[in-house]
Image (cartoon, rainbow, N blue to C red; front, side, top):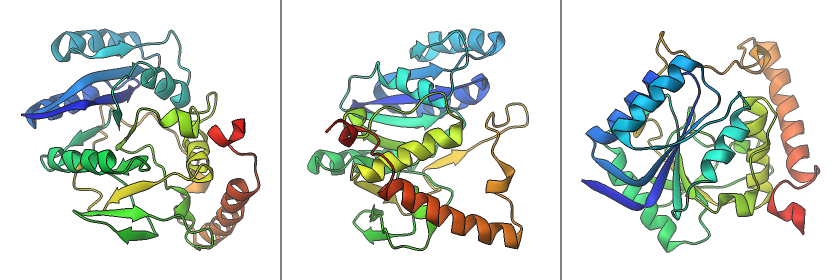
Amino acid sequence: MNSFPTVSILVTHYNRSRSLEALLKSFEEIECNFAQIVVSDDGSQYEHLNYLKTLQSRYSFHLVTTPSNKGLGNNINKGQDVIDTPYTLYVQEDFVPTSFFPKKLHTAISFMDEDPELDIVRFYSYLEYPYMTPFKKGFSYMNFNVYGIKYSKLFYYSDHPHLRRTSFFDKFGRYQEGLKVEQTEYKMCVSFIQNNGKGLFYNDYQRLFIQKNSTEEPSTVRRNAWRRGNNYFVSKVRNVYRQIKYNYDISVSPIIGKRQLK
């Protein structure tokens, strides 16, 4: 049994109850035992909400609901509010952990226990973080390089599976609500950098979790096609625009989060 008494898992959910079941079943199969499981639902349709209650009787999770869809920011905020363990493992419902994950989670907890300035440990990504310094045991420090030409430097923080301190809001502020998914994540990325966040990145970044989008329960996120198209000219213009915007938002725009209160 892999016991994590100082960690609660926070799962955000919206209309993908079978995917949530696969996630919870996978944690059970690799014998991960957390202090608390919190499922935060964003106003799912009746059939999914009803199935969540069936799953709740099996997996004994704390279900936090809302009468209507209020977006990712609200969904994370209300779920995080009920957690009282030192650490939160944040995972969206369309991921499943692999058998390699428990050992690396133990390692990540030990790193955060040893270094109180460490805010986050990232376990999954689509791409490698562009600026890093090797640390140990398969992890590297992420370094935000203000002069770096790779715009993906912004994603020092990411909504993909990660371990963070439950006091995360005290330093970086709450997730901004009433925005689209991409803007919600973007605002937290900016806050993380502005407030001098410190994080580790697992080098083999697609080994510990697998993202699964089935035809029965596809992704509920609709992303802007201009931001992801592969046209050469569009991609060049987009990259220049991102460099200017990201550096402006980080360096010039009002501080988001804790430093805003000073």
